[in-house]
Amino acid sequence: MRSQIFDDLNDYAATEAEKGFVRPAQELLNKQDAFLRTCFSPGHFTGSGILIDASGSQILLNHHKSLNKWLCFGGHADGHEDIRQVALRETCEESGYTESDIEFVTKDILDIDIHEIAENKNRGEPKHYHYDIAFLFRLKESKMTDYKISSESHDLMWCPLDQSYKFISNDDHMVRIVGKIKKIV
Image (cartoon, rainbow, N blue to C red; front, top):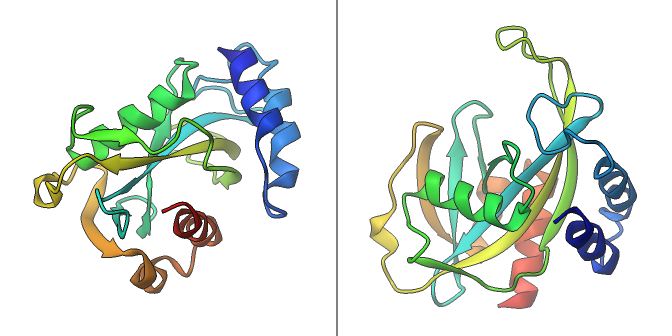
């Protein structure tokens, strides 16, 4: 699985903003514990999923509880090295949809990002980095009202892609992702 991720990153057409993320992510694959949330030096892999509706015109935004901003779905690999499945699992867990409700738009990586996570003394976690690999999913049918807000979120909201910028403009990573989706759908 690690060699597949390495190859996927090698083949990935990184944007200017992402070019500095590919090589460090490939190097992290050499660490035995790279997929465990306890790998803090320098960090660990996470998987993210972006969910669009069946028509491709709307995105399901997640108002993240601890970060208090609108984001995509995502989370820790927890030892699982199939990062696509991690992204799918997290998207399902945080949206309330099931694997039978959604599908990959493409199995290709949509985005890669490395972002700093602040120290969390309550959890005994030092400052570290999330090496996040994101994938794009589509709702198979028009079941847009079937989502369920998880304990990790304040709210979920379907939003037209063009209008999403007013909710995500303070997050360069999400702005980059939405720009990519608009080119795909």
